[in-house]
Image (tube, rainbow, N blue to C red; front, top):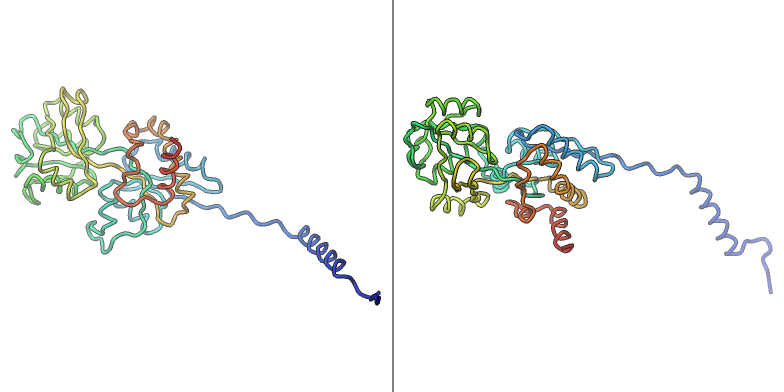
Length: 319
């Protein structure tokens, strides 16, 4: 049998190649760590002190390699626009603004927004209509020709509600005021009614009632028709004893935690869980968070982000 003494066998060559690769690998520089990401969270303007940072800490503790920055935003329109422009990743906005932006019906909007996706329905915000002690107003229709104060960015929803009761634009003199000034003018008679917006009980409403003002219900056929047109609205009942004896029916909408549609599914799933884990801490700063209904949190006015939907499926399966 002929043997080639000058050459390597295949086995020998393979062994030498493995050794070279092993030595090369051991001398190679370690892989660079993945760059840190930034998550910007906008919190609604009226949130109590402590809410933005509490939310940021909850997200920060659950997301490795992510810098979380929470800051107060403006109104709901500012929040959805910031998401659409890519200036924020997560935000809190009213369900009305979230829904209208998704169908291109915000004032001045040229096309539906593509980016906002929902994470969770949060606490409700109620429309609370208070009439002055000497106004003589007994029902919503009596507001025709009256001066009615309002505050914040609620002019659009106020107009929808008044229209449902047959009061078009111009039929009611809607006057924008700061909340404290609106309350003073309602008490001294310069305003005949005022629309307050927020979670009950509101100190301003309690003060107005103590000074002789009355809450009017917003219910019946007009609001039923309104809810058929605008699914983000919902009936809400103020319980007996909150402001006075007896319950009072009104309407309102919820705040919604939203995010950019292009956020990673795993990240949004983690954010969703962190939100619910942080509810006790958030409630310590803002009592309205106690009204977040875990059973209704996924009933959002726009499609859920895939990461949030995954969390709700896992939660349901874990029961």
